Amino acid sequence: MTLLECLLKKVHYDQSHPHHSKVLSPPPEMTKIEAACRKAKLKNKYASVRARVDSSPPRHHFTGHVSLTRQWLRWGQLMEENLRILAAIRRAGAEGKVDSHWRHPLPRVMQYYKTRCDFVKQNEVNKRKLYKLLSGTKCRVQPTRAHNEDWKRNRREIIRKSQNKFVLFPENPSETFEDPSFRPSNGFRRPRVRLELRVQDGCSLGWLQLELFADVCPATCRLFLELLTAGGDTYSYINSVFFRKVPHLYWSGGDVVYNNGCGCYAQRGRRRPIGAENYTYAHSVPGLLSMRVTRDDEVCGIFNITFKPMPQFDLQNVVFGRVVRPSSTYEAMRSLGAPLSARPLVYIAACKI
Image (cartoon, rainbow, N blue to C red; front, side, top):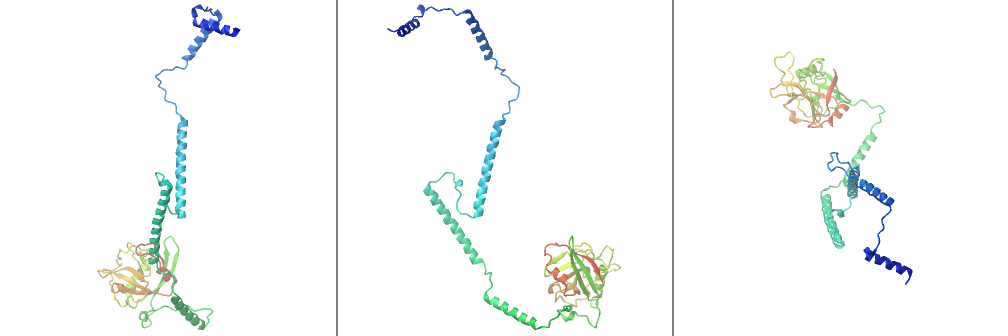
């Protein structure tokens, strides 16, 4: 038996028979060290213990909020990116279905089948739209026959103008008279006035020259001149607007009371208002100046300027003048205004007699 085996046998015997083993007492210095360590360990054990009742508020964990904020930002960025992708697909005109709208992914075969079904439906819709456009749209290109007629007319006009005599300084164009019956009789010299029309908060339209039929309607022309030359009086055509402007039809203005077409001017120094003198001239030509007559047969100073024949004004308005044409201001007035709007506001800025 070796020495190691003897030692192990001895240790095993001592552990199995503790009463045969002799326990030796530790030295005194080791007892003091163990007591001090035990005391320090007991002290450190209860050093972190606090009162169960704590009135202080809980601590704010900033890291948790930061993580949630980052997550929300990431979700917002993802949603914006998806919206941009969908908008780009919409602008590109791509057809089909966005796969992200499917809640459950379909098998590959079913995805192909659904895509083909959607393509067929969209193709049918596009065919119906195209058929509607083709059946309802008219030809925008003029046929050859119309082009030939235009060319013949232009050729005749070119030949006619080429045969005329060349004039370096053309004369002033003569006044336009569509109806000779509007000319003055017996050499009567009719008065003429010039009105400056201006757009409110804008530029000037120019001067409009009017000829008054004083030989036919003297009282009506006198009332018109009276309101023009009122000066600083309360009632005057100066600064009054054209409250109704119908393009290519007529303009109405001259309401010196309310400036909206609802007023009636009571003439100064008269006990009875002026009535309709006569209906000698009809509204048979454009460029006429007529004054409105109320249902009570009164003339209130409201006048019209026509741009075309207006037979519906006959026996309701007294024709007492005309616009001296050709006039660039008169041509500019034709296309201005709207039937249901007073804009742009055009008023009489000045006059010359």
